[in-house]
Image 1: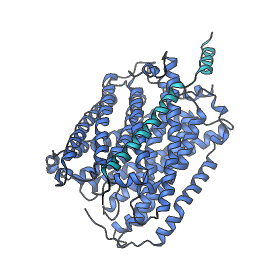
Image 2 (image 1 turned 60 degrees about the vertical axis):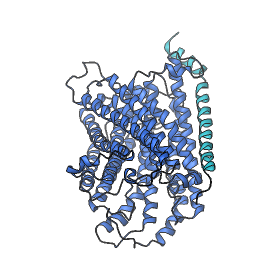
Image 3 (image 1 turned 120 degrees about the vertical axis):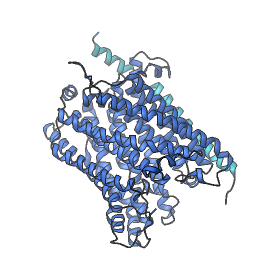
Length: 555
Length: 48
């Protein structure tokens, strides 16, 4: 079958090193960013360890929170994703990148941007958290650095498109491989979504930071930011879904339940994940309530492809488990290969994400959002998405991808399993405490250890949260050790051994998938039209009324 | 019987009953947790 021929393609040493370079930067960012996670958690429960970092200039709560957010939510994810999608494109299409130099330029642009953004953060000149809302002021280098990271990822995306175009020319009438289609949809969505933050930085934040304009319009800035901010979550999630749909079934010993449903879910994510940003602005006074309801309704629309994902991924796992001899209505779950850390990481990530999905749907409702907005509920929620569904899945991907690109075996299965379960247990405790604290009114982005208003009823939950944070820290340290020892050990796979690139076959021949699920044009046009309808009138009004008279505040 | 025909027979018979049960449980849990949030807020009463 065509699929088998594609997977036989041998990835070059240069391309393996190129992907490995992405993973290296990603894991270094995760390591540094994660150092500050427990400091936040401990500070909330009254144990302020920031003082220990004072001699090296990192003793500030908000600087720590900025480093944690930027490195973990933006850098770890973006570098891991671009590296992972690169190998997906190469291996999925069974050919090298069309213009490898273009992708290398993209990668180095991202690295230069990362260094440019990191320096002002470490110097205390960009203590603006990862949302960098105006009128908070950061150094121009921070904004320019972030812009370069985004532009670099776009350039890597162009490299994917050229490679796909060449494959299409050579394979007329053949359905594109699912993992490649899904990777490209992710990149298209990212390139449309990041237009918001690009406009915000280039027309508002950068000119203000350079002194060209006198100030900013915070309302318009937030609208631009959340144009990007919510789909950013899907930029993190969709690569994890690439693995859940397109690789996990094979790793569990089965097949993808439905190629058509998988493609449909990705197209719907492209269509619906962008025009929903106002659900992050329910309390913003400058946006009419009608538009908030429109975005709230579209937000519930995203629940549909999410439920499709739940059904299709679990059905694929059930298929695998029953093939392995699993019995009973739910007893088959035990038959899954839980001892394989690649699989267990993704299974545990999926379980945590079920709670993340419930919390997300709940806090998207207007009146609940008014209560939990800007409370600990929100970081509790996104630790179940980006720090669970995404990060734990990426841990699972790393366990085969690092051996794949280095030619060295995983160090070790037992330690990797330890990472998975530690992360799972820590996150259950941490996120539950954060959600409860949010309902009790505990504010986010606040050094609660210094706050005089903390009531007694919060204290038990604050303690639970810090215990969860400590367990998570143990988990991430163990992950970094596993990744480093795997990559830098001396022993290599013996001749003829190695890691097989996992591509799940579909139960039904992908060639039977309807052609409209394999065509970009109608879906991209639909996305642009829907975004224009959902955002156009408000953007025209907000830009028309923009007043760049809010002076920047340097924290 | 060859592997291929065994696979085909297995695929023909496969019905994701467990999956449907899990999706149903998920939806039930979603409704219950969502309602519980509203109940917590109602019990807490009006805040000004």
